[in-house]
Length: 311
Image (cartoon, rainbow, N blue to C red):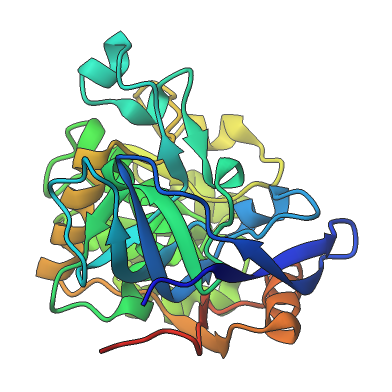
């Protein structure tokens, strides 16, 4: 049954990170849109950029309940996931080259009627992805932004098995970076300011652990072929660049093709995040933002929708 309204958890006051429940009319589906019943949505620090009055959420999994007239590759009842990107122009050179994630006219979750902090979303079918059967929805959700963020550098820059890859930061992104790099066949070096994270980093797959506040440890580190920086803090970049003989590049999520490759790779190698799981309601939306803001989440938070209809 197709609902008439969406129950969403919108940011009430962006400065205070508080939420309120809101009812939003289900928009008319465009030819390439689908309507999804959300099962769960992971919480990402990028959600903090969502303005007041909007529902954040861009790492969501759910079931398709209705499709637009021109949707061909997806079907009602299928489990799919969506990430940061909502759409692109589909006509420019980069879109035609399969790199829609760097289209100058790309849109993201903030441009949608509602993000994944809701019981339903309407999304462009070209930016939804099939979830491997072996993967739970809660495990898959964080991969749709965090996973692709650390997978794309490995895939885009021809990293070979045996390469020495440093993962800077052992947090929501970093712990997945360790897991993906290890599954890629790399020699993984975890770089962290906190010695308290060594045991967990090695459990995630790190072969070496370096406390970056220890200048002697950093200087004695053997050269690295790549460093994936997963932290947003100001850094002494020179000390890390000296460990490399490569160029410095940025990475913005991934194209639809790469997103599906990443999910399939994660399913094949049993890559899953370490999670905290809470029900999706006003209080727990606030709790999730608070724990992430205070760097307390270990290591990704997933909110589950009680209005999800599994049958």
